[in-house]
Image (cartoon, rainbow, N blue to C red; front, side):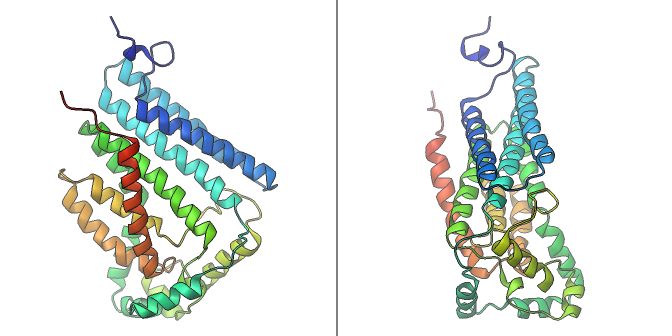
Length: 311
């Protein structure tokens, strides 16, 4: 006979853990706020692709809860629900962020460029050096674009190892830090050095960068007038300070501690530092701010999701 705790969910067929329910409810609230903000601000939104993300979230969560309860496959269930939480928050946050455009406050990039200079960092100088090593530059490009894949692989890894607590904290850190990063960026917005510093076209081509001066102008247009329509094809990384790329790299390394994946994760995400800097979407100080936000996010997650007392 199933206990009362085991029969929670849809007719006893779907069982979600308390931390999962908390995050899914939070995603639903943020999703409602995102839709409300877009409608109130009269933003044009290509709704079907985003609604597909919402549906995928619910489907993954329900399937995960089902295989956990009925099929007695807790690890598979943990991975599916975790993936649903990740995809769900990604979908709702994209609409929310782009509904905030155009931004009311002036960009702080000139200040951040001055801070970078004081720290001895100069983006065009880094690109000039990388142009002499195109293979290295292209390798850093692959590292830069691996962040989302690393997040999904970490979800699967922690679920496979039955590290429920670590997985739930990992997901919550991702949610909390993105909220903090967007709040900071909206208050003191920045879009990175590519919109303010020029690099020779030959250097851009040699390094394979897509953060060109023209792309920098596109970001400035987003800031000043906003997108004509919020749609997946215009969704791009806009939160510069603090760097969410840095936060994701730290998340993967921190939560793979004690596993065989830790060393390769540490090596890849050490390379994420120059990879993030080279693409021109971030100042050096953005990465430092990302470290601070990540630390705060871990502190918050550890207090919201506590370990079960040992018996």
